[in-house]
Length: 404
Image (cartoon, rainbow, N blue to C red):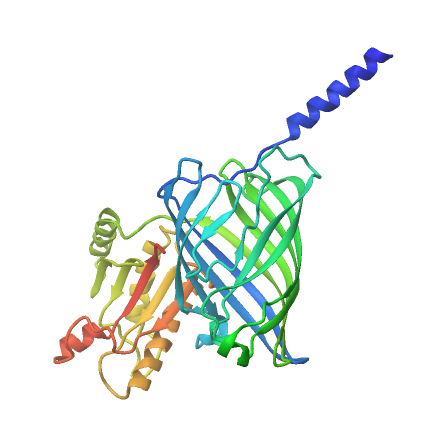
């Protein structure tokens, strides 16, 4: 009997050890990835519904170094866009960008200077430095770093601490068959801000911050990286002047690798494809943001954002090139020659960039949330607008295959 019990306990111990796993972030110098987060949010001000926002946050990251303890040094570019700012309302315009440099340990703990406002949520997830079994729970401290420069003129990130509660829910199969690990994370926020001193005490400031977050994370242990995650949240800020801001919503995030396209070889390869296809008035160059395919002398119907049929056919050829880099997002930038008012040039350049974006979406080149637009008017000419030929060059649409 004693021997049987001993065997049973040994078997249980064996199964427990076999199913235990240590989770770590793995970093490799030169790795690049981007995170796309779509947010659906209701904003309520002083008890009255203000508006609904659909926001896309895009983060592109490069691991620039790996320290001896496995900590990764990250260089990141953050961009936030509101769908309503595009002319068509069917895709996102390119918003303001923010740079950040930070370190992240294999367990997920951040080290970042006060000058950086992004990312907002830090130290989440944080994994224990031990093996984890299904159903195991643990807690770890984190914080939200809110950017309140515009609302409250705060020149440093507003740090709101929390203690996150974790549960390991076990293994799942991803859509592509990869093994992913599911974690449930929740935290509550209740934070009384220190009372400002001096002149700042006369300014409205966030006196109390409350909230709740429920997240489901999927982690690729073999790769050592998050795969995707979702969140349901509510954040309430009560100010010293008695105002109340209430943010309620949900978000979904996808993490994806992308390839660098602005290198010399890729630029030359794309140039060769353009030449072989006989596409006229198209230049291919590298830029800080990625590889740029510039459609110069692009022809629309007069004072319109509707492309001539010849230009639509040209765009179909370019679309086949863009499909070779499916994991890289696209930025469509409209440009005009100097003619008319600055405002009219700006508006027309936005409308034409939107028109090209919509065609690329219809052609199946990218999903709606993988393509961004902006209009530069006549602010970035490639030639002096002193001849009709030069004006035609400046009247262009640039398609950037984004590296960052």
